[in-house]
Length: 179
Image 1 (tube, one colour):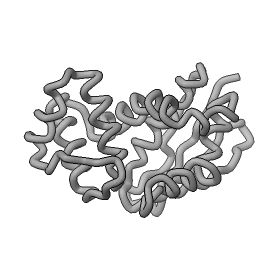
Image 2: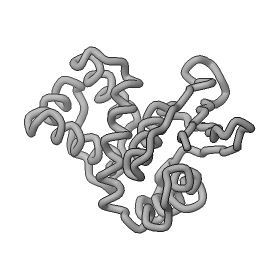
Image 3: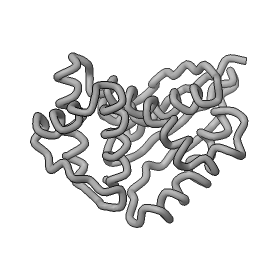
Image 4: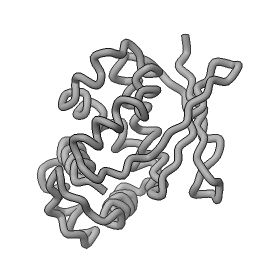
């Protein structure tokens, strides 16, 4: 996993829980802790950090990942404003992840292993997002959708229809932005 993801986690943890929270989390998780944005690090480090934070906060790892994704979105919007500028709503932004955002990520962070998303529209207006990644961080993807909706001043409802963590071949999310 690219160091930029760890840097974002450090930023949101520090902003929410204070300057000592990140080194305390690193120590408690038993991971290296020196993450540079361009470096690549074991996925297990992120898993350890998320699981440790979940235990400390008495939350599920999925809840921590959702919080992380939602909290990181304002930082991403500031750092990569050009990726947000051409969109006027979250649905458009979310739909651009494969074609615009992830190719840009791969340019900036060589070797980045981005998840792949499949999009389809359901008759009831829901956007169905298929998520596939060996990392199984679908809750982080949910958090990013929540954060994108916050960024564009929208409310969103997300139903997790299928999940890789429950033996499914991919995760499927039904995402609705009320009119």
